[in-house]
Amino acid sequence: MVSRVWSMVRFLIKGSVAGGVVYLVYDQELLGPSHKSQAALQRAEEVVPPAMYQFGQYVCEQTGLKIPQLPAPPKFNFNIRESWNSGIITVMTALSVAPSKACEYTKEGWEYLKERIK
Image (cartoon, rainbow, N blue to C red):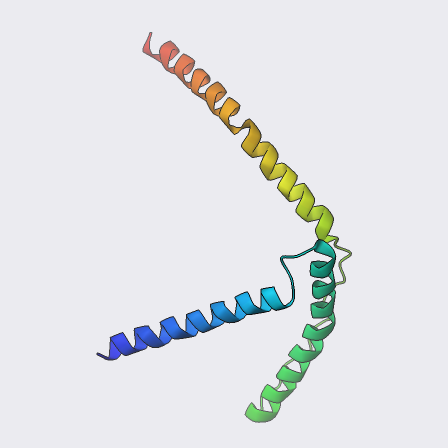
């Protein structure tokens, strides 16, 4: 009985986290135009490090532990739009040549087998 209850609690927690993620993605319009996604990433880069520092300070105060100061994260000049587009182009190119490559590899395989059988 306890395992069923624990299983249900885990399911509810995972469902809540997944629902929260879906809501956050929809609310921040992360799947919309790329300029909105890039703006959300920049906001996250500005907000997350101070929040992590404050959380670390809170944990130190509550537990009495000393957490060493981490170095600042490196700054990346990363354009999401260009990498997204290049990724999509690469995937679509691979999908478009997949049937002809499969046919080519099949022919090579048959030729190899014919040579080995002789």
